Image (cartoon, rainbow, N blue to C red):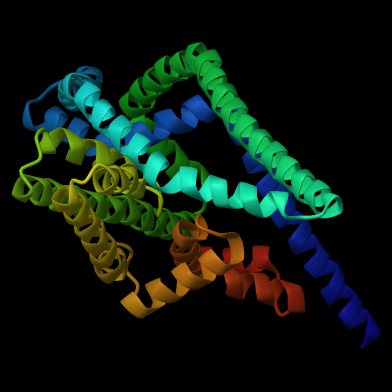
Length: 382
């Protein structure tokens, strides 16, 4: 009996070691071959278009791959050009109106200082002079400490922004090289796609291959479904912003909606980065109509996103809205904002592994019910 539990413990440690080593191997090897991973993903995405061109237009496989990559790059370049043009147009508009708004804001700030800050300062000064020397010293030390903390915080923020900008500039050559190598890898992988698939079929047992196919199809469905859901959510928010700004008669509504669409991919801090300061500025300059309108519009976006996100995400990744909401909440509580994304995806991966039988095989191996290699051989015979 003791020997049985000893073997169970040893097999459990073996499974844990294999999982840890697998994660480390994927992490470190993945960092070395990241351009080829990106190339494989690109090849996977363009493969339907390649096959369409190859079989419908009778193109050679290599030329079909080259044409598909050019088409994808052209579409992406056209979209980026449109967005950049709209952004430039918006900034030109802002450069014309900002001086007037700056003067308005300066006048407001001056009036606010005269009517509110100055009287408050005089009252605080009178109150401070009424304190005994010990209390004055303690209060000054507290104010000095608060000022130092605020200065340090502001300096750290500026330093972080500067370091981030420097890091991006320093990595641009490396990113360019990764982009080029990824495109070349995508070309050769897609060109030899049929041969690679046949080679995998010949060297991998049929039973194992069927399980890999199930995992691959499930992960593809979950990941593409998640990306599709995020695209739908951000697109709906952008359309809502565009309609709302058009109703408010805000100029360059399309440019603003495109910018909000881009930043809205950041969870929870997307649209508020633009609409929050905009609403505050509008209220502070006396433009109550725009301030109230932008505030209501942002509230509508948040409400709309919270109401439709579980439904859209569940229909895209194949789990119920309640389970989607539950996994999003658990992920958020465990690891923060990123858990909202990783929670449903982790559940989907575990669900796929369960359906494939990986958990069952692993448990059978741990408790010694059967040998995994023997199980695979039995399935091969079937």
